[in-house]
Image (cartoon, rainbow, N blue to C red):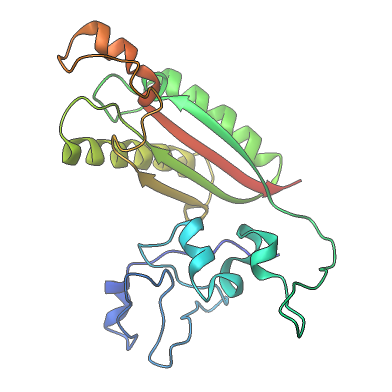
Length: 217
């Protein structure tokens, strides 16, 4: 099974002869249009990498086969149909949604003691499997501007990663992303835009961090 591949900023590689990477590519490519790898044979990811983007990248099966849908990387026969693959352990994911208010104070990105306890439970779950990757995605409610909420969601996801790494999870196995206020779950159930306690309480489900642990037992 492939290891989860390390991420690195393209700018760090520009000075050692690697070609510029178009935004649609999620792996660093060299001047031969080949994926750049580390000394351990791990593909270097760009800042555009996400599991979904990896599935669309032509190097996705080479670099992250275990994280992609099985049919995406199945060999094709002469007619273009997927040929049966040998059964093997398939990475499975458990998605955990944690209320941001349980992790952080309102409008903050510093973990609360209660939040650290929640993440300790997650670390224990990760220790019980052969960990592939942890995806932490931060979300906010609609109160405030889009740019501010985007930064807040990113900071919260980064705080989760920092804590997990401090607890022994390898940094290159934790992927973070901020979605700001673009993916609310409350829909149109919370009325008004005034920053009242009633609205803040109603929008609580939108303030969350989705954490997905992927690995095999």
